[in-house]
Amino acid sequence: MVLDEALSDSPDRAASPIVFRLDTASGVPTYLQLVQQVEHALRLGYLKQGDRLPRVREVVADLAINPNTVLKAYRDLERKGLASGRPGQGTFIDGSLGQATLPELTGLRRSLHAWLQAADEAGLDEDGIVALITSTLRDFSERRDVNGCGEATRESRRQVGGVA
Amino acid sequence: MNVLQTDGLGRRYRTNWALRDCTLSIPEGHLVALVGPNGAGKSTLLNLVVGLTSPTAGGVTVLGGQPAGSRAALDGIAFVAQDMPLYRHYSVADMVHQTRNLNLSFDTAYARRRITELGIDGKRKAGKLSGGQQAQLALTLALARHPRLLVLDEPTARLDPLARHDFMATVMTAMADDGVSALLSSHMLAELERVADYLVLISHGRVRVDDTVDNLLDRHRLVAAPTTAPVPDGDWQIIEARTTPSQTHLLVRLASSQASLPPGCESRPVGIEELTLAYLRETPASRAPTLIGATQ
Image 1 (cartoon, one colour):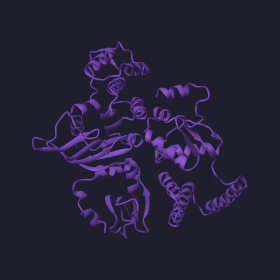
Image 2 (cartoon, each protein chain N blue to C red):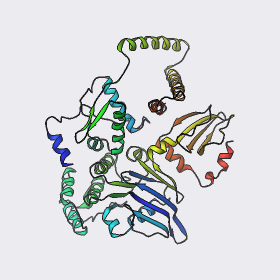
Image 3 (cartoon, chains in turn blue, brown):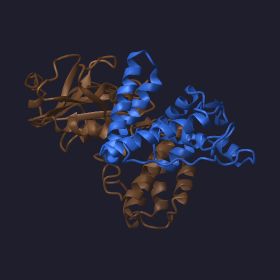
Image 4 (tube, chains in turn green, red):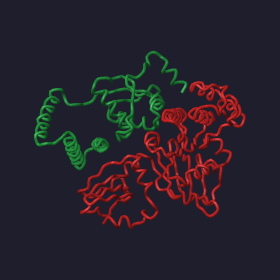
């Protein structure tokens, strides 16, 4: 603990650029909320290579959550290749999200827009659209699971299930 | 090392069994939530763990095999009872002094630092502090002994949401700093979702759930199936069933994490609060196999 405090006082150990928050009503497991917030911040550029994530103790004191939950989230980020732990220093961002490129995203958005138009014309309201997308996405993920995909797929399904 | 091990533990008061056939083995490093309806035997179990009462049947050891109530056990355990045990007419400083004198090892510097951080005036009478401050003071005195197991009996029941948050933050920080394990009884299911990573559920004097939260979430599913095509028997046990004319909703416990559910059922993961409620609703009668038969 003494060592930790000494480190946090030194100038090169500035505060982490990300502050976690919790949505207790979302139904998404706490560790997954932390993981998603890091991923979200990475996608939007709030976090970049070499940034330090908050210390476990800081998160715990701030949110009053179990330290094992924070460790689980950080391990998950490490497993995904997004962060790496440096002994005695903390956990640092180490990677970026392998997302689709911008032109690909634009194309996908356009086709989704066309689909939404069709759904609207068919008389579906917003909730109906969300329900249809959620259940189709679940089926899709399940089918991928059957074809022998890894744990990441199962997690994304849990996340969808939690939100639904 | 197991912080708590019980084997067929039971406690009878006159003719009533407050706790029966309680067998648990809980590894260290967890925050263990002990839940159950009023009168389920939670406080009895906690009192047995800290050695305030002795078993009628079976045995209980703590901290890697020390008999509950023994010197070694008492040295490693700190207990905060439900009513926040403080001498109401003592000042905060006297409370610290007294606790130091009553214990073999006591970190006075830690206690004073925490009290300053909490903004509590050392000259105030303990009985004049707010509920949140009294709880924090009792917790600080317990943690200043640097226990390896912290036992809390419904610690946040009477606190406002902010005081509750701060109290749990102190417990969690002690876990992160000292690696202390904690066992706490509570009715605050929504809060447990955040803080607990191990769940023990006692109902009607018996243990119904005893596992890590991760395993529990992995092993339980909410299943919806058309009532006309009932869910067959399989590698699962039905904990709760709700039937409407068109759909049957089941909470099932899978025999293993690999167990597969029948095709045609929609299944989704379940949260710890929902899961706990289902077990709490269970009655001894509904635990009989008739329930599983009824859905066939």
